[in-house]
Length: 113
Image (cartoon, rainbow, N blue to C red; front, side, top):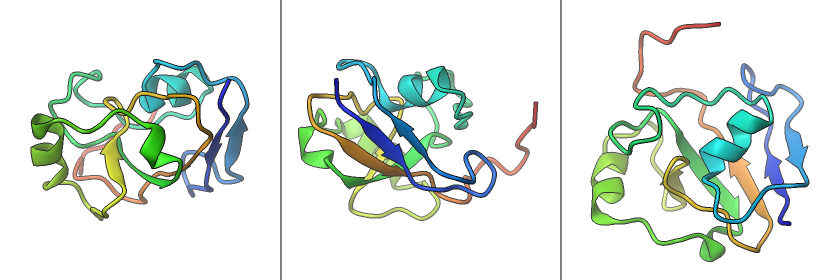
């Protein structure tokens, strides 16, 4: 099983995280949520917003390719980079990943649980 390293994020995982048992075929978002990293996902993983935007710092070549809808949505994401993906659409393959969750999203009314 591939490993996902999540770089530190001030609110979601201040110390960063290492997930050793990511299942191939799951989205990055599903893996993070299953490991108590509460990445935003306002559209419930339906590829209708950008709140689950992440930056794949390493291992991005192993992920499925972004489709046109994801690419169009990413154009609206805060802090867009060449390695940006919507974590609800990026499916884990067999390569380890290093993920950065941007500090901000376009969701200005974020609710805290």
